Image (tube, rainbow, N blue to C red; front, side):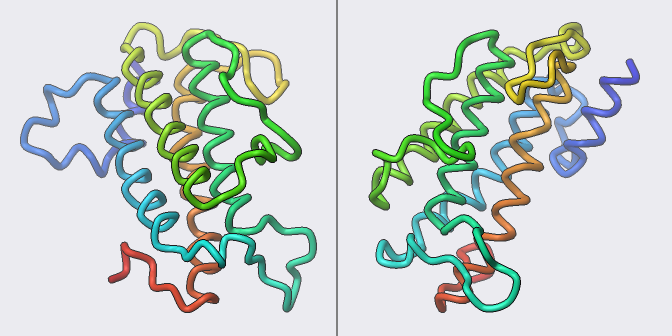
Length: 181
């Protein structure tokens, strides 16, 4: 029950709907995923293709990911976490620094990779139940076992972490994020 309450609090933004009490755990977690997807995918689509290689240079920005790498990293981690929840092997290569396969390089390929990662993660969220949340699954990060709920929260908080960085990159390239328009 305690874990269920944690899940409900995590998705508190989605509980404002009139039908919130009838939502399943899977629906609550998926709603949180939809929120972040609705922010990051439009940002990826709004960034011009010629700016995908952008990374800040001034200040303390040595060895940071480019905008493209930020989007690919989000997608790669989504795949890894969703696969762990599903009890599957990730369908994609993690690549160097969890930035995905180097062959995914163009804006169109990266946006598709990102969208496909969210589709796969929605599939994983659909498997969540009040009874399986506390079950242990293999962590995709080499840390042994983790509770399914803990892994199910990763796509939202991790994506928002990198979304925040990507918003700064976009603004540095004179792109107003769609969520701010």
